[in-house]
Image 1 (cartoon, rainbow, N blue to C red):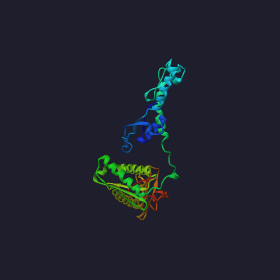
Image 2 (cartoon, rainbow, N blue to C red):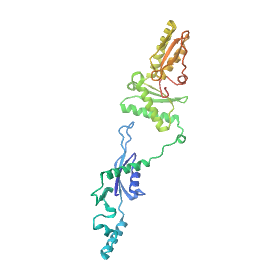
Image 3 (cartoon, rainbow, N blue to C red):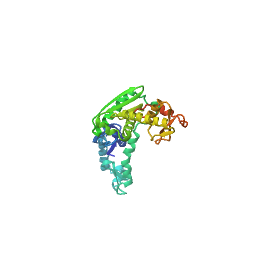
Image 4 (tube, rainbow, N blue to C red):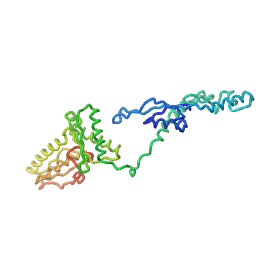
Length: 318
């Protein structure tokens, strides 16, 4: 095989796979041509792998030896290897190798389509073998929350640039919780109905941190001040419903909410005498029930929610 064309995540990976395919030990034994440079893209979109063409350098010593054998054959007329295969055009092993590593078979009239497909698949198979094995959980380095904060800020800034939005991204760490704040009038586009887009942005940020640092901290995010406004509105709304439950008795069930909003309701009700709250249902239809204490049904406690940090979108909502 004289040359191969291989693609890989980087030029080095592609070259290594090509050298292995050609059976070469060093890049000095080949000519390397970079056809396409790799591009990472953004969020996995628009990326491309590197493509290289690696050609085996000619070996001058073999050529001199072959010329010597040819002279002996002409002079003595003895039956050498070259002499035995030349009369019927079959060559060594029934064929001869040409450019690109393709074989021209004298008996079959050319390689079959199955053989050509297998030849093209070999570089990819060898490339996959060069990938590093997955790291075990015990081998993963301990993540630093300050480093994770830098990664989160860089990702959010890139997200704003990708959408053409002007805004400022800041972070702070308080009691092992990473707080992210995205400020700016244009950033309201990343909030969405009832904060749905904001929660999606938080999950994307969390995924990026996990992939780069093998883990993610507890996180809270606020975009364009939405989380703060949402908390205040929920407190006012909950207070009015609690007063109604005390005056009329019975129970009032709120609309299904995420864990962050439910926590705000529970905390608000806990500060009002004569009323209590509990949750019913399963995610994502879990809702808070506000009931007067004298007629309240037995509450279903939510220990998991009580330990969450809320007031914004959180990565540990559940």
